[in-house]
Figure 1 (cartoon, helix red, strand yellow):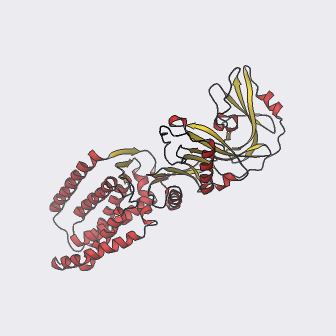
Figure 2: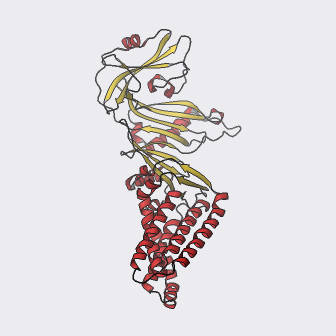
Figure 3: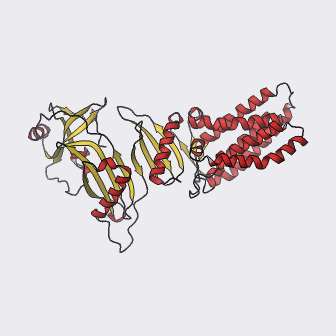
Length: 449
């Protein structure tokens, strides 16, 4: 969250400077009165001002209070990620200066830990913050505070030490008292959610920057990013960067940085007496959205519109597909348009047409090879599919249906053979269009999904 706050919000540094300036004069006089070096005292005030500005500066004034707190299982990963390191580094100077000023490293460690907890609770309870409460942030802050206190104690090693018993008593009072107050406020008010996602896969600086940029493009420049997580790809598939905001969620392919899917809202209920969304209106709304975010889908492609369900069956599914020499290419764009003509979800694959061999197996021969007892081939199409090494193949995709079972003519394309899906009672067969050999569905990766 600190990384997201610093990016594009340089004004928080001005806020930190203002806070430090406001506290500089009283800090100076207090240091003179109690015999503390003004340099150390002003350093403590400045570092605390930076902590408060970086953690409590509102990122999205329109955002509602999150009212949730995420508890991370992966403690080590939280500390080793970019976000964890930044959080820890932020608390090191504050705890160091406070230790040097007070000569009390243990109470300072307890106080900074309570301060970090108070910051996380405030971020979750106060509307307009646009931030998220996360145990990973708390853990990193505490580690940074402990490190700063340790460095401060080493700095003071020649100044002698205070009575250890008094140190421990004061530390206990701060830790127990502060923890009790935080628990009394947070436990009844917040929903605690346990996350099993490894923080070792938490997004790095480049991934967070790409996620923030995508969120601003789709949801507006004032949208606050609540969480960015990275999942590495496997079996020839790209990695995934998942972006969560109050307005909706996005998924980016990595390292291409292209947005591959998103949920932008929910299908609204149709007001009584209002006419249903027409296919033409859905197509117009979808085309405007595609032109703004996925202009590549509008070139050399065909568009179809199908009912997509939703309250009253009012939503429409708008699809873009491309065929080259009669072969279905891997590119695709699917948009669900609500009755209010707003796109509520989408799925996109921007893959240029691959180089493919010419088919050696005719459509008639492919149907003969795919036919099974009691089943009838009801559809077939040439498609491009990639294997686990990323190599492209020309395949026949054929749908087999039991005798007497028909597919509605208005069924969405994602339920048709061209998409490789199976309806109840329907089977799908893949054949190599060059050799005629059958292909197991797990042997190739369906780029159309």
